[in-house]
Image (cartoon, rainbow, N blue to C red; front, side):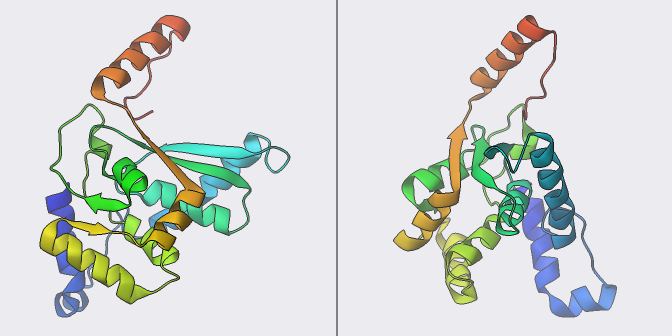
Length: 194
């Protein structure tokens, strides 16, 4: 995924090519998709009793688009208490929230392939917000990632991110055990991304 997404980003960043072929994308790096996802945060929060009770969302996260939509919904006024990033063995986002360092370490194939990502494109959007909408800071981070596979988020910025988000990791064994126990208890077969 990361390699293919890198190619797509390169094509979008080649402005001559992009304009010449009228390049467009519908994947999670397209803002239109995030706008559509914002809607179901409002819908599900209202179904769960918001604004009369606190609501939190735990979101299986790979490219960070879906959970960024939740963040955008919160910024639009939806009373979300916490946004919880759920990762698998490809736990770069959980590690980043814990350490403040975004460091790639290869992608592992898992039973939840939508989360098998090391370069979460929409995390750039959150960095932009955490950095006070300073594009030069995000550019510096992304250049560091491209050059060395890592960057360290400034203390104030990671504190702002942690004030909105929590993160956790489930191994493939934990996912399999949860699927088995849920099936045994309720006769419901969970998707491994759940």
